[in-house]
Length: 531
Image (cartoon, rainbow, N blue to C red; front, top):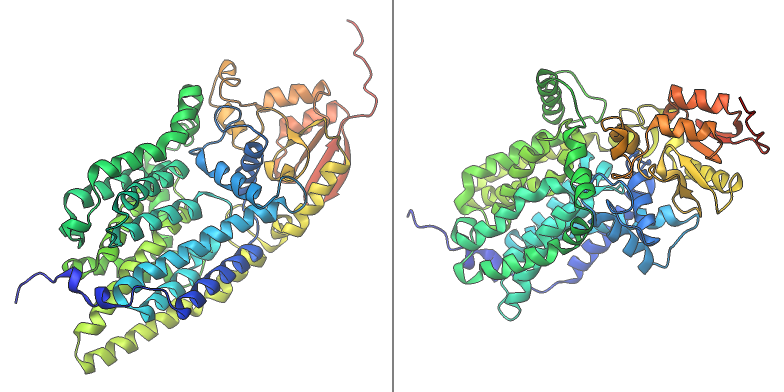
């Protein structure tokens, strides 16, 4: 009575450690499902600059050093390197290649979550956890796009899995990989930096996290892993410190100028959406996130009985929730990073409840759980319809009429049009960089990222070159001088200054693909008359 349970002697430790045919089948299903979701998902606006950044890296350029990229720099190298391994350089299948890498990340998230849960609770609960993560509206909406979410969470989960592995023969390599995994997540998404304290705490206080001292990572080896993982960013920082700092911090610090009260009201609205409070949201239906997040919080009261993977996941989920509320502005999709960790904690807690209750209470608990599962799964088809077809409520799309422009089939028409109306040696002003992915066309310098124009508005002109930016005023002047051969963009992206410049300079609208417009400079440009 009152004795702390021996984690090393838990049922998990007595389970067969090898993988079975059933495990292999789960992994196959995870990746089949992830590829299907990625194929069906409508394009997200931010995917344009992530994919084009990966293409520029494939061409020998570097984030912050050669072009503006408002994130930590590792993700374009992962996507660019993955495309290179697949033999894809340019062409009409480039978009599919980058999306396929995202599918691998999502499939890895599902598989690692399954392994973490199975290690401590058994295959049944592993299947439940995988199903919950796979069908969560945040997961199939945001782990399926070329952004930072899937890659960063995958490496966090890898770090958690390695922390729970009882490995003696390759201990030093395991500890190095733990440090590298956590830092790689930071090299993808800077917000994750506070999470790097967690492995250090595990090394110092392993029993708090349900890990025996002899299995805890060695602090020195862990720090070596951190150093190895940070090298890519360190090399870029040394070469262009000011541009690196601006891309990762400076731009974001000036991104929102809303008053504190307005920003707090916005954060509260995000909180309402996540927990189904207040007025309904068009982003998704149902009560999935309240079930996951509240259930994960409830597991905290069983901390001493939770297995190591669940404890670590609970800590990461809590930290990520606070981290996701910090940026200005805050978006609902940021909280997708919490989903796998919340599910691991929730399912682990549920397995403890089932195993520790009497038969009658177990039946009641099972019925309550089945009811919660029905509520959880009820609106999955309508939420998939939103993100895969109609675009209703989806940020950057909003309605079925606008969803047409964000389908892969329509995007390919635009890519073909760009190549028809320009030469390989000409630069193109693409108001969304995704219109150049897979083509043999290069963006006008300073426009590789559609957020660059917004960033330029906050800086004096003399700093634009330093940070690889181009302002609307500068672009309008270049259009008037006919220095930009082709301009392509969604109808809503053409600001008044650009429209005026295009009209004054005599640019011709050469093609319209739904709401995407292409303007070409006049074939013969008359010299300006002398004053």
